[in-house]
Length: 110
Length: 112
Image 1: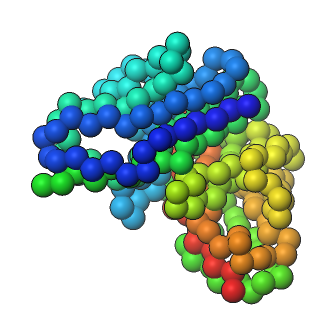
Image 2 (image 1 turned 30 degrees about the horizontal axis):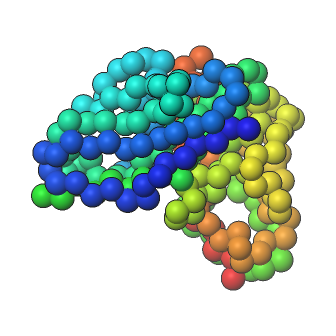
């Protein structure tokens, strides 16, 4: 079964501080992992995915298959990063499912 | 450039009513999903569809059904609405090539 966990419901950091949002998953095959973000009063949108290995808005995430983790990191948090962050997993195959974690609310304080 | 559109932003329905939530996408995606979003629980998958007339149960299908008669439209049906179905409902469609999901703006349903 696919499962995504995010241990922190709320994470508060000061502007300029490093931030790490934790994500762990369980999946028997080879998953694709994503981070989605929802800013206040906006739609949920893709932030980044592990297969592209890109940095978006200063955020990066590395897939660690040994620890089944996909933590989201940013070295210097900005106030505009305050949002709800969801880690998501997509299974392989034709009828691919798409499962989300419970989310972490990031609050960046001035 | 709205790509996924849900028919209503807000709905108020009475207990026992049959409720239809509509979702339309214009990206020709095969995969579409219905989630409910609740504080502390995140997004929970209700149903998904990977082709016309095909559907699969998600994690919480009880009390819901879906319909996919056309590729662009995926409907969520509450056969007999109950107060515990008060929630934010999100529709999404998935680009299989990029595996990026696009979300609608959400429908906040209140069952009284």
